[in-house]
Amino acid sequence: MWRYIQIGEHSFIPAYNLFVGLGIALAMLYLQYEKKFANFSFQKKNAIHTGLFISIIFGFIGAFTFDAYTQGIKLSLSNLNQIGLTLLGGIVAGLLTFSIFLKIKSIPVLSTLNILTPAFCISHLLGRVGCFFTGCCYGSPTNSIFGVQFPKDSLAHTHFQGDLHVHPTQLYESIFILFVFLFVRRSSINNKFLFYIISYSIFRFFIEFIRADNRGIIFNQSFLTPSQFISLTIAVFATVLTYIINRKSIHQPINS
Image (tube, rainbow, N blue to C red; front, side, top):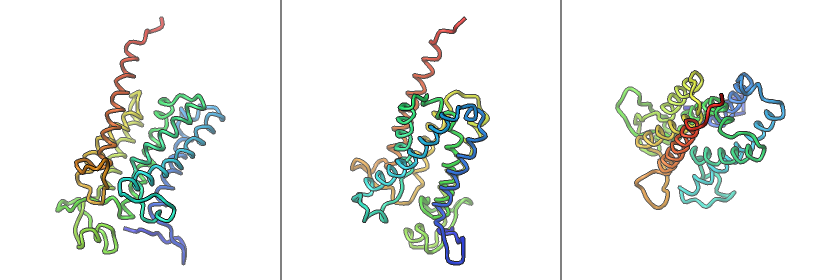
């Protein structure tokens, strides 16, 4: 685990920031070689890039805001160092922002999201690798061969007050997203984005059972973690939307 990576004699960069930035950069680079994206006009590409940039900003705001809410922390500039980032909160805020932006620009939302899905997977995957290097989002203690031991200055060591092996839930998620990336790249399914959202929501719901970091509380109940609640909501909504889209395609008349 390297929370800070040295880039000079007296210069360091947070590992999480580095991997998140690398993920965004590689995702943008990938789009330049995506055939369907390459066929867009310059104006359309520029609009999508602008929308992605704006959605990233609102995504971070959403991730901060949701974490502050679930942790019961007052959201203010003086409290920013006490607030973390909740991925699903950021995803929801970012997607809503991006979808609204596309609508304003009269760009088809779902078909555009389908093209961007592999790029989303790239940034998602590397973001979780950044979590692993930082030591956040750690798992519960385990005796399995997959267990890892974080150093003494890590969040996991502080939480358990000992040298325990824990599930590397960050890497589990990265590996899962890698398989999703490979599938959507090679598959001919129509709704790649909905597949990504539904499969990740289901995975995230179950991976929460072996997460051990402070998950926070939502709606004053402890049965479901905040991320499990959002995962269920997203999975149900996306599944219903998939059903509606498929029904429309089945009943759509075929032009002779």
